[in-house]
Picture 1 (tube, rainbow, N blue to C red):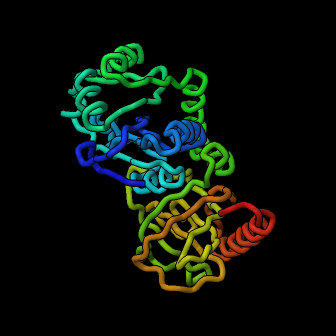
Picture 2 (tube, helix red, strand yellow):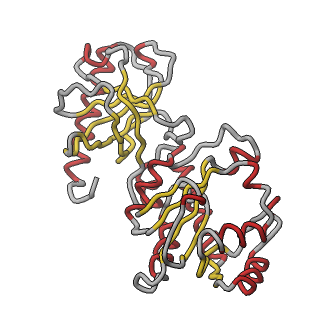
Length: 314
């Protein structure tokens, strides 16, 4: 897959089959569109192309800095790569771009720059300045500029919207199994291992403090989770706490991972943490000893879960 960070970087010797959107989560609903896209290339006669945007249009048009996304741009690239797309364009969305009229967007971007042969798009898609143009306008432009428009029907679009909401709700409730079932992969995030207060090692559970790469990444509700990570090409399992460590009197939210049977220096490494199952809510214990006892129970629960799910790809 070729990745371009602007429409104006894109070059191709072939005409393209295009879809566009934010694709947040790249979940099963999105994946059905990507399969359509890939299957429309007529065995390589045309190139498949996904056009997406960063920052998210809402961050620019509504100046919504509180928006929480299911994927960072790096994660999105990794996911698109898995689905066999020929070209991915991540175009910088800004006010100038939002000012393009519908026909300017079609003529100067889709036709002249991206060499469109066909676009696969939702029946409810709106585009152009102030989002004034709709699918009927796009069909008219298709006839004028000689490209096909394939509509994704209302049922499929509704399914995509519902899936996105269900994934967000599931993560907000700590229901990782449900979120992963809608995603079609296990939810994950990445961050750098930074130095913490090293309190975990004093009670026999050393942890890696994860500092997130992006502040807009949606993190599941506070609590304890079973997780995995690839470290030096080996899959290492562990348990993670998201929250404030109330028993230890912390007041800053942290993400800490204790890896099972693992004793390497991870400081400054970038780790991808994959979430497999929610264990319990975060809670305050009466003593450090009570916390330790619970951590041993969490470990036993995690190891039993992993043993019973040996055939699931983590």
